[in-house]
Image 1 (cartoon, rainbow, N blue to C red):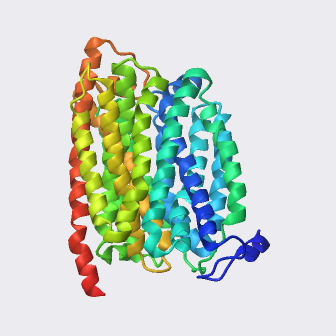
Image 2: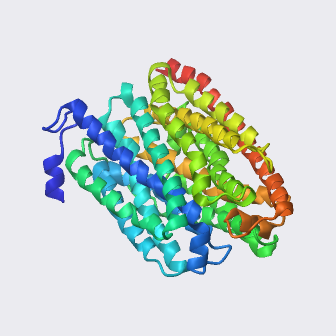
Image 3: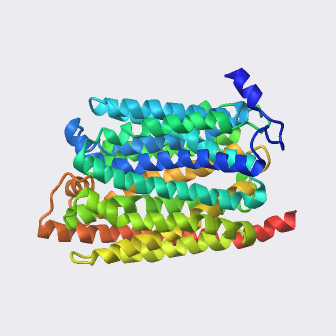
Length: 493
């Protein structure tokens, strides 16, 4: 392995012998986009399989949510650490290791036999996903010139949207006609093929930077997030009691302790010094709030389409495909705008467009024309396609040289914190109008709806969508404030 990496390495600023620079850059982007694609597939495809997993493995009603949350929680906690490993030992090496671990985790998930095994193997998958996600942005920053990175991140957005499309469609087909286990089997050949290409076209070009691993910070953050999540998930099906208050309060205390630890660490998990860069703070907070507002939308719409409107998983999935296609096409275009005119305009416009889509979702009724749901999802996808590449480009351009891995990991951490909590927040808000247990059963697809309960559930998700709208508005305001931050940064230069 070491010999291979030395033979592949090229000095900083040079390209290894072989294809032309442009052709090699295209191959690198293809590999990176593939990694993003299979990660997106695995995020969306599991949504449609939750009821089947719950029945096949006899997973408890309040535990099935951890099939999703455990994966996201591991990526959230490890993103900055594995990004740091990329700075230390080579971003390409860590990226390829992520592919391999992800494939192994997918194989084990496919043969899982009970509740504990499926959640444990999802944790392993999350480790591989963290290595891929945290180092992908840094590999792009190493390979693509700064003036063209917005477009490159736009192609990354295409990969995410294509993966999400495949996840939704394949999930619908597999759950309807085959077996839930194949939602994990399909990752194995795709991941192995991508890994084979990666070993040939990716070359470490960055200088190694000696960094430490923040074990205390990582442990405290993990326990803090887990405590809060445990309490929130339990609240979706149980009443508030002293143990739940203890978990929630303990999680808050641990997060506060985490901040104190980070201030005293020589090599902190989150480099709080990056927040002194004017454009960094609003960019990271906008990513967090956008994910918190948007990630649960897919769950809510699928439950509406299947539970309230009575569609099959495949039919419900197909209605959302046009949105992913349109959103994927917007990504590179928004990236080019970010390259030429800065990230503020396309990112803020993207968030504003998503607000419009969320407001429409809050008006869904028992007889809303299905074409309107498809159109609204396309509008929301256009907004997301404008936001992601622009915001990613803003973060990476603001990051100091030598900190691309850390900045990419921090961006993924903030985004994933929002994703992890989005699911629980949506159910909690929805359960304000209907019983917590009924809300949870409907949300994971294990409860059939009659006319009365369908009307009650529709009203409940209206509240959830209004909550998401408020969060998205705040994200848009933070994004717009970067105009002042950019001016401050330019004066400093």
